[in-house]
Image (cartoon, rainbow, N blue to C red):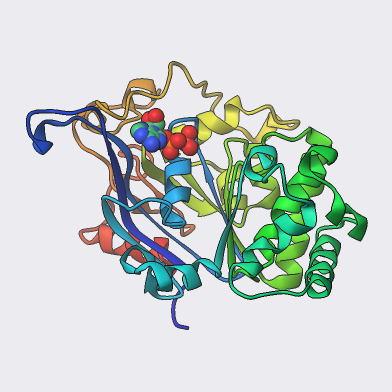
Length: 340
Ligand code: ADP
């Protein structure tokens, strides 16, 4: 395969809001606007941003749980938005999802063993012996004892349930797992165990992750690359260590400054996030962050900033911190986003 494992190109999702006289009159929620990124095999891309920024919508588009308004999602070079059902079923084997709330995403009437082996049984018949052997092996991979296979979700702890959810995602040997707020509902100590499990699985099995989280501490722990989203757009995309050591976009800076971190000494600007994320139905003109931005200039009120490359290979959409530096910068930034 040439190119990255997952390549997202100019993804757009508008949700219609109510009804109008004609389709053109219907107001829309611009949940995802022109989002592009790529993920290599064995890599973790984190998507961060406040609630309502479009993170979960991106996750659902990646899994083709709904159709995009525009753009492409290429998994191993195949555009999943164009696949018909039978092909989509096979492609889905390569991309699995882990959800935030393991309790509501696990069927309460099935034993853990059944839950874990169900995806495989959708493709092939398994004897009871085969099923139990598979369940035991998957439980071992996620650090659980084989006896757990006989328990119902209600008989498991939160951490065990999330491990069962991960075992189910592993059952089809995916190349990539989309994890949407996968540890947010867990206690802090259990969160760390699950994050370490995911990192061990990545090392042993070479699985890539798109890891969606509003928690910067979690992202700093697990990410290789980080995409910061604001009101449906990526505003900064960088290597994880660069982003945390030296945030470039004022929104990234404010998010990091607002996060409870043990060592705030390297925070350059004590930016605070004031106000709320504006409505995606009627977003601010120009840069959507400008009403909350301490650095905003007149240009920010009128012109939407594009993602521009900076010297350390990150891309940033900010007229102040990353003003357009060359004629064909959109081409350059695309090359950077897509790792070409
Ligand atoms: P996040 O995951 O960052 O919290 P979401 O992707 O859930 O953001 O939501 C982005 C925007 O799209 C929000 O304004 C949300 O209210 C809206 N939205 C999400 N899902 C739907 C839907 N099914 N129908 C209409 N609006 C939606």
